[in-house]
Amino acid sequence: MEALSDRLESPPWPRRQFMKCFGWLRSQLPANFLLARMRKANSPLIQEFLRAPGGWRAMEIIYERKQPRNLVDWYALNGLPLSIEARNRRRLIKAAYENAVSQTPADRPLRILSLGSGPAVEIIEVVSECSRVVTVDAVDLDAEAISHGRDLVERAGLEGQVQFHELDVRDCLTQFSGEQFDLVSIVGLAEYLDDEELTELLTGLTDLIEPHAGQLLIHGYQDTCSSAVTMRRVFNLHMRQRSGRQLSRLLSQSGFDVTDQQNTPLGVYPLLTARPTAAEESHAAITPRETVPLQAGKQRDRVTLE
Image 1 (cartoon, rainbow, N blue to C red):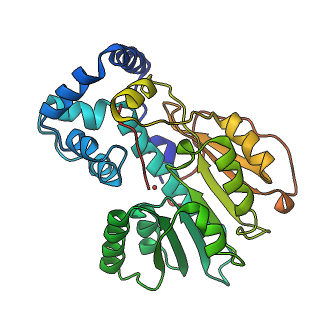
Image 2 (cartoon, rainbow, N blue to C red):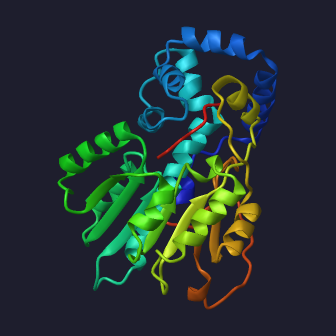
């Protein structure tokens, strides 16, 4: 069986250096000039990103990766570092869901809570392919994303297993008070919260995670290819950078012990798995690593366009 790490997109070193240099050069150009060029581009991804910066439809275009219309469209789909890393993140997240399914005792349903879920495409795929009972509560504020997700659920025949909730993630602490989940995922959300907001959310989540084997899945964001300035100036997207080590520190302060860390190949997304401290038998520190040990078989996306 092909290892997951072999299926990640990992550009060679010369191309990575070009990405960094081009990203820096782009950040020096006037925002109005960049916007004018983008508005003229015959690229579904660029046009969707202009319509809804960081929206879930742009993510679907990145995932689908259809035949490019022209060179500009090819670059948007295949040359932008965060298009590449969005697909890599999706593969890691889906593998984490699959691992959670395989590790949870078979004598009871697996419960998943997805915060900032968007249409919850990755979870729906996992539940569709799974032979055991999995129930999902997906939380998002985007009504269009939820509507699309419900359509996907209906097509897959999973109406009794996947439920969507149009809520602010902060309200889920009250909405699901007294319940416990085997896996809570926070994808495409933490980079839009400051430390105080994220710590408050994480602290509240410790009561919602099953204390013996429950897990939290969350990722940081690092501007490894010089895109943050452009995103802020052109699209008014302000993303908070956190390395895996910085995110680990926040998790520790919020009542979690980190059990695993994996990085996407370009280092944009450090993906951490954690458990409530009381559930941990060992508090040994982990060492971040560059490659992914997960095996295949065992993603509201809000993405920034570089």
